[in-house]
Image (cartoon, rainbow, N blue to C red; front, side, top):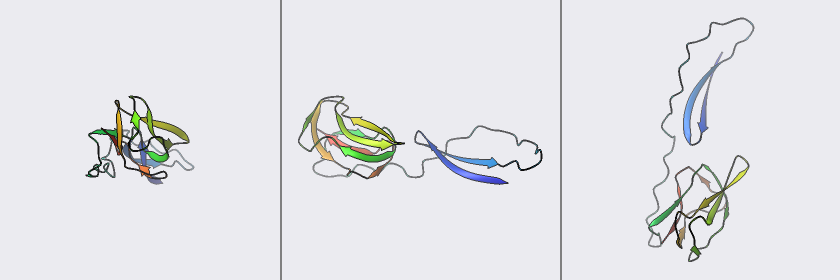
Length: 123
């Protein structure tokens, strides 16, 4: 009996087929390495809003927005948490890539985000 699954590992999507061995010995199928499949949905392009800053704060992993740490207009230093993402029961801080002022927060608590998605912008 063959079953097909789609598995996502570190943002890479793999289509995997698994053969279930029931009862007797079945000759093993030749094995080949799983090749990455194009992501199902590419990260959305940043919204063109007048408030968007030139520095993008992007998600390092897919997950759900757990908490928004910074507010629009707030000064942040490189490494300061701007957004917290929850993935696999872990809280992952998304930090400012450089010093700046928060120009926009483009997500809300509870939003599902893909790796590489723009979560906020800085000036």
